Amino acid sequence: MITEKFLEVLKNEGVVSIVSMGEGEPHIVNTWNSYIVLTPDNKLLIPAYAMRKTEKNVHQNNKVKLALGSREVIGYKDYQGTGFVIEGTARFLDSGADYDSMKEQFAFLTRVLEVTVTSLKQML
Image 1 (spheres, rainbow, N blue to C red):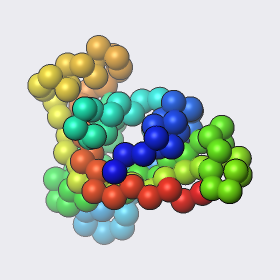
Image 2: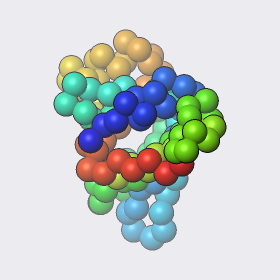
Image 3: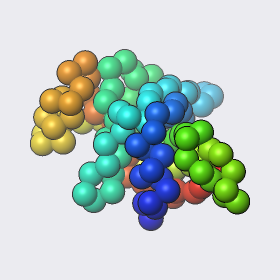
Image 4: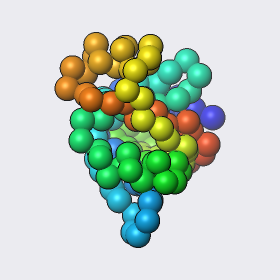
C-alpha cells in the first residue's frame, strides 16, 4: 500500500494535516513531513507534544485522515508537486519500543501518534 512516491514525499518538507472526529465537528492539527517515521510494518509514527483534542477524539473514534504533500516531488502527468490523503486508525503511545525510538529522535514529544494506514491515495 505504501508507494515509492509517498516515500519520496516524506523525504521532502511539507505540512501534514491530521483530522480526527470525536463528538461535534472535525478537529485538525498540523505537523511536518519530516516528523513522520514509517515502521517496518507500514505504520506511521508522529511525535505528539500537544494534540490533546486529537487524543481525546481518538479515544472516542480511532479513525483519522491525513493530508500531506510536497511541491518538490513530481506528481501526475509530470506536474510539479504531489500530495496524498491517508485514512487509518490511530492510537497514542506513551511507552514501549516505538515510543523510546521516537523520543530519541524528537526530544520534545510527550506521546507518539501511531497511525495504521487503511487507505493511501495520491491526489495530485
